[in-house]
Length: 528
Image 1 (cartoon, one colour):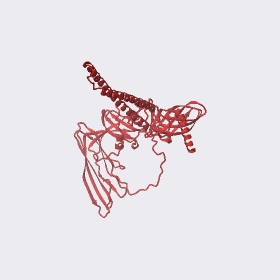
Image 2: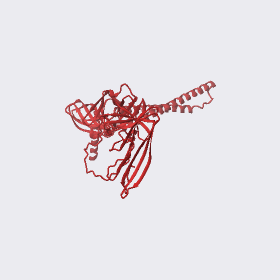
Image 3: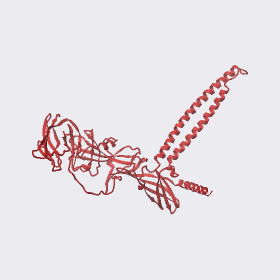
Image 4: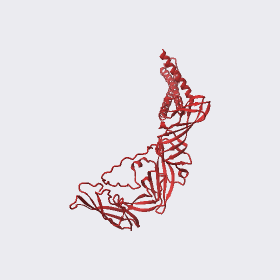
């Protein structure tokens, strides 16, 4: 009996607490968002009412994917915030969002309409039963005229009742579909918003109106850099458009709010790395990979970008963008507000526009490709605000292809490939590969000789840079002796060769490249 009394007391207290809390439900309003490369910091304002003493406030309208450790609440008014707690679902609090209330009211209304239609359907069914019970009429006591009238009446009523019944059945079918749709929408809303409530306990000295300033980090937003390089012709500057692909799945529509983009990534470790002993061993050269220069295509990153480049316009968001360099990042803040739905799709926003003087040259690397490439070379390129990102290239107002920009690999010069030119063909052929054992030595000599040919099939003369390479060694056990490079420029540190030539229409030139590798017989040289 005593145990039952305790349980009853707990139930009563819980009931009273629930009724009290239901009066303290408030909807927050999203004011601004600072979007990082991964995640976003959101700020809300909630207008609340406080009673004297302890107040348990329930605040809704918050984003999904909140990091609970990042939640910060500031009370603008008299009182003290005692605790702040994130609630995992609606069942934990006596809270109902306005959208939930509207959906539940609609469900009740549709269910009531279905019941009314069912009553009408049942009444018409009863009338049909009465008509069926009296359809056999005896000739006794009735004239032919009266029998004809009764038959016409029965026919009319049967048609009317059957028609009414079919209409009601269709109405019920439609209402059931509406009811199913509303229930699904309510279930989705409850699931999608199960982490959107904060419970805040505030101790107030008096009854008063106040404001809550709420700030937190959500994982469900990000932005990625995206670039357009545009070249009208070989005498015009290269135009660079720096854009951002913004996406979010916070469950909130970002409409009419201030959005700032930051180059910071809060998900990266903030711990300073430590240096440990660095051990070295015998060097084994590795083969160089095609496309390992300053600009290369990163397939994994390219697949993440699904938004095509925006067409050129006289005015864009870049004309209204304020750029601020902070101590740890660069921030882009537009002067106008933005609207970004919570659908996980990329929304392209232009951050800045720049124009650079460029030198346009043809380049060929026969070792990897038989076509020549038209390139734009920008000297003194400063990419302080630029991040690694995908690039769309436009030449002569046509899409020329894609590449990848990594400013971290840039020094002073940016080289952009504007596309292939099939009018210039090249080849690289191995003419000799000879191994010779050195007399009275444990080493072996390997002689390699290549022939490089380039033909200009265009109707105009072109300036062309032909690139190739010789291996570079970092160990005394391997020696490289160059025999022939046909007057090429040689970078001794990298082994890169460059021939700068001018090809007349229809002209073909040939260059020779040969060298000797000397290395121990009992070891294998990688990368050759």
